Amino acid sequence: MSLAVRVIPCLDVAGGRVVKGVNFENLRDAGDPVELAALYGEQGADEITFLDVTATVDERATMYDVVSKTAEQVFIPLTVGGGVRSNDDVARLLASGADKVGVNSAAIARPGLIDEIADRFGAQVLVLSLDVKRSERTPSGFVVTTHGGRRETDLDALAWAREAIERGTGELLVNSIDADGTKDGFDLELVRAMRELSSVPVIASGGAGTARHFAEAVAAGADAVLAASVFHLKEMTVAEVKDELRKDGVTVR
Image (cartoon, rainbow, N blue to C red; front, top):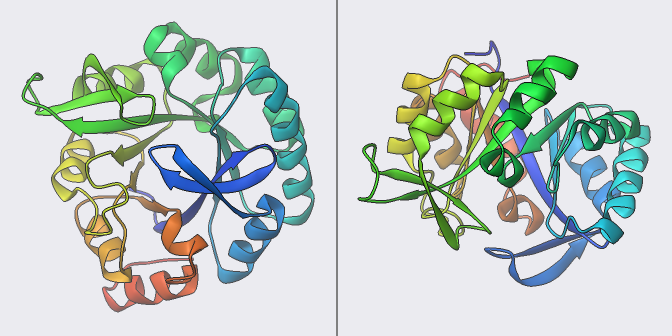
């Protein structure tokens, strides 16, 4: 595990604006991504994750611009995911100011993409994003999904995570589709299972509703905790989450 647990706000971006919705549907405007990233930076966020939720060719240039403007004003690591399909996409994002890139669907379609990115840029820039559902169809009881959880693959989530690490993934961003949006807490069983198999940091995502939930995820083995709506809706601040973690004796920056 990393020495200090990281708290990471996630910003879903479409058309140059932060949006919020449920499973990428009924998206509503949530503000300017550069302004929100700067606000979270001031609150003590350790990193910012941007997710390009449209990731079409015409939106890609807008996303590069958002990353570039954010990197000029916010001096914490930026991870960018959504539509990353090649080494060239990674190179452009890094040149725009991203520190890490997230891959998901493209890596599922072509696992060799993980090897290619890790070989060229190093494991430290590569985050595998997993949208995971509970399922009786897989040995572990967890299946990888795409399209915001609406389409199940044939991949066992734990087996896929293990393969991705072997191919060169530097971090696992584990999002529970079942917990996402419920505000009932992270899927702690899923976090524990990923922690047990992983030799790289595990980022827990999906289900945060209270500051206490973040502490529970860390106790289950998360190296970092990520959330979106609870921060965007001002239900809590990054600083409040870190205060709760400190009460549990967790080291935070």
